[in-house]
Structures are given as C-alpha cells and as structure tokens.
Image (tube, rainbow, N blue to C red; front, side):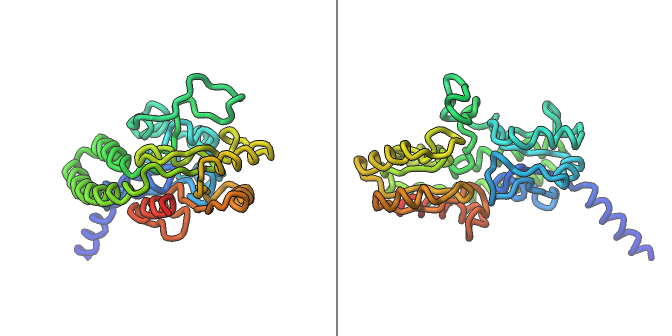
Length: 293
C-alpha cells in the first residue's frame, strides 16, 4: 500500500508539473514537443487540412484554451479571423494579450511583404507582413529558440532540460539544413506561380521567382480576366510549375495547367497537410521536391 501511495503521489506530481501548451498550428506544435519533451502537454488548435486564416471556432477549442498555461500563436494577423473570440470566451488570464503565457511567434521573425498601406482595395493583406514564415525551414530554429525561452520563463525549475532538448534539436536541424540547402541550389532561378502567397519565405530563401498568383488579390477569388492574363504571363515567362495548397479550390489551377502545359504541385502549408508530411523533415522535403520538380 505504501508503494502504491508513493507511486500515486509521484504520478500526480508529474501531471501537475506538465505545462499545458496550446499552439494554433501543427508546425509550432511539433517544435514545441521537441523542446518541451515530457514536460509539456501540447494541443494543436487548428487543423492543417483547412485554411489557417479561418479555423472553425468550435466550443471544444474554448475548453482547451481555458486550461492552457501557454498559448503559442503564429501572429502576423494569421489568426485574426478566429482566435480573438475564442480567447474572450475562454477568459484565461494566463494567455491573454500581454500575459506571460502568450507567445506571438511573429515578434521573433523578420517579416517580409510588409505593405506600405492597408486597404480593402488591396484584398486581405496583413498589416504586419506575410505571416506564412513557417514554410521556410531556416525559420525553425528561430521558432525553437523563442519556444525554449518561453518554456524556461514559465518553468524555470526545468531550465536545464529545456536547454538540453534545444541543444540536441539544434544540432540535428543544422545538419538537416546543410543538406537541404545544398539540394535546393539546383532550383535557383526557377519560376513558379502560386495560388496564395503561402511560400514567399521559402521562394525568397532559395532564389525561386514567383511571377504571379492565381488570386488577383489576397483572399479574392480569381476572375476570368485575371486568369487569362496569368496564362499569357506564364507562357511568356515559360513557367511550368503551379503551387497549389490543399484548401483553395483546384479547378482554376487545373485549367491554367491545361492551357500552359504547366504541372500543378500540391504543396503542404503545415505539418500533415498532405500525406507523408508528418515530420518536420518530411514536411520541408515535400515542399522542396515538389517545387523543384
């Protein structure tokens, strides 16, 4: 009985020691798990099968946010359409704006595509810049460093474990990047078309040129006039690759491909968005391979 009681106490201590961490998207969730290990209980709020701008605000998400010790969000306006009302309903002081338990990852990123002005005339632009930085594998260690510091701030007693986990992850990811960056050199100068500007960080990193978007403006459905103009531009620039995400309609890309001879490549925007993209390495490998083919 004494052994059973001791085991129960130890298990209870472990459960209470775990930080409940909510992340808005899967890539940040996986990085958090790598750094936090057994000391964190990670819940991902948004499904990678859907548009990250418009996650359905289910009541179950309110319950998850209500219990969270830490909320890690992408930021840059990406969650603006769904997260604020959930936070208000959850009424968890730990993770409200300005609280110690809120980590806005965009504050640690050098944002690109920052507009000089914001107006509905320009579509659904993000005032702080392009928020899709997680599609660049070189941003992974930036995110991991920010997560490590936040976990240590909230749980200083386990600083050594978080730091050791980070060190192991950092060395492994640096080796991965060295090989990945070398492979991507063969794609420099390639020209592509995107549906939405999801991959600008990746394209800029590896000197790949996006000559246009299927969307005439961010968040605006393609018109016939814009589609025909894009087809002409692709023919003139000899573009043979269309980057299509999993959540936008695919008929327009297929039509453009039929008129240009281009190939439509389905590219993941987050971990598990397409089959096989279930690890960080596989996620970026698929992006690189499908863009370069």
